Length: 131
View 1 (cartoon, helix red, strand yellow):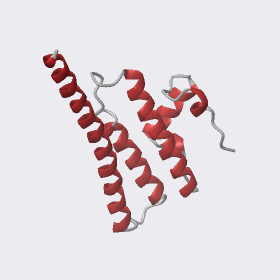
View 2 (view 1 turned 90 degrees about the vertical axis):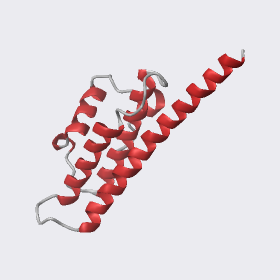
View 3 (view 1 turned 30 degrees about the horizontal axis):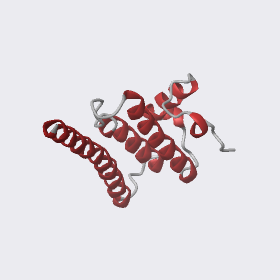
């Protein structure tokens, strides 16, 4: 009995660490893009939109793969990543008037999956209430 409890506790601790690593990655990626923004304009068009696309792509490529399927179901991992994407898209659209989701690979791929009904965001959260 003690061995079973100890094993469960160690597995839970590992999963908590895994979730913390995911959040740390998101935070680091956010700080990295903020540093790029503070560095200033690069003289090319749609500077902010490009920085935000790089941010979303980096989150998707690096952070989205951290969550461990042995700790969390594939459905939960997809849901967390998709909800994170929704929040990012909302914030970007509110801040950058020239934002075009079709020009950002990670966002375009997500929106294509969502349109096909393959998003991890379900129920009331899936209803787009934006006008």
